[in-house]
Each structure stands twice: as structure tokens, then as C-alpha cells.
Image 1 (cartoon, rainbow, N blue to C red):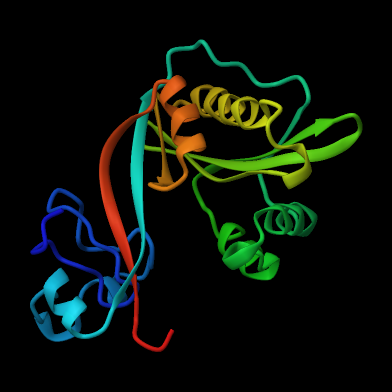
Image 2 (image 1 turned 180 degrees about the vertical axis):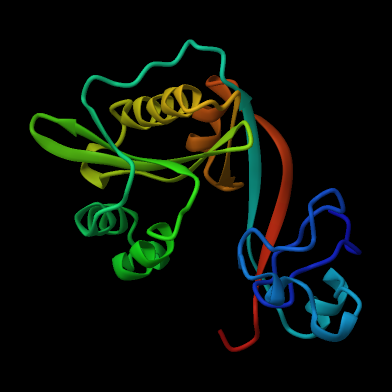
Length: 208
């Protein structure tokens, strides 16, 4: 890890120089990503000295869409989020991502072509995820399987469903991000052809 790469002052995410610094993909608001008054970028060493603690390291992974994926017959696809979808997704995530109101507020603002997927098994909704298609890519996000339904291949079916929907919407490649510690998910994505593009770290401000 390059300790001199720039870091977002607001959310503490580190990005390589090749990533557009005009807008932080995490914060979304460019005013938060670009320090006011043309101040120089903070370095990792400076944030460490200021008490920012390492919270997580994530991988961004990319895969080609070659036409071998299909929409699962037990998947329901919708172009817009519903409150019920957000509630189920957040409840299955739990922890820091369990706020359904917060999730709904964010994903309801998506403007490019979006697919909100729900997988059903034995009459019950068991997995949820989003695919957003823009500029030849489909980004897969908020993929989650109900805790009681894990280990049955639903994650693979959900991922390939969203890849197929993205290809139908005009994408030629898919990308996603996954925690470095989530070995099971990383192994699945590698089996589906995803390779690591780059990594980024997220830090927490003192007192948060």
C-alpha cells in the first residue's frame, strides 16, 4: 500500500492516482472529496497521526460479460426500489448496514438504468441485490442472502442474474467491491471471472 496516496478528508477512503479525484465514489458529493480552498491532499501518514483508525480494506473486482449468464427463473427484477425491498435487504445485512431508511434514501436516488433483484425460494424472498448500468459497465452492489438461506448457492444465482440483466441493458463488463476479509465472496466472484482491479482503504475519524 502506498502511504502517500490521497485520502478523502470526509470518509477516509484511499484511492489510487488513476481514480478521478473530482468526486469521491463513497461520499458522492464532490465538495466533500475535494478540500475547499485548493488545500493539498492528506496522506495516510497524516491521517494516522491525526488519529484516524483503519476500518476496512476493500477490493474492486472486474469481469467481462460474455453471455454465459442468464436471469434466474426464480428472480424478480424491478427498475425501482420499494420500501419493502430496502427493509428486507437491510435486515439480512444487519450490523452497520441494517438501516433500511438510510438504504432506501440512497438507492432511490439512482438515476442510470437500475435493476433491483429479488430471489425467491419455496415462496420466500431469500436474496436481494442491485445492478446499475452506465457507460458499458454494470456495478453490482448491496448483494445479500438471508442468513438462514446461506450456503445453498443463492449468492451465485443472484450475481449471475444481475450480470445477465446488465448485459441486456448494454453493459460489456461488470464490477463490484468486496471486503478483503470476505474470503467466501471473493472466491465466488473469482469463479465467475472477476479479477482484482485495485484496492482501497476506509478509515474512521477519531471519536466516531
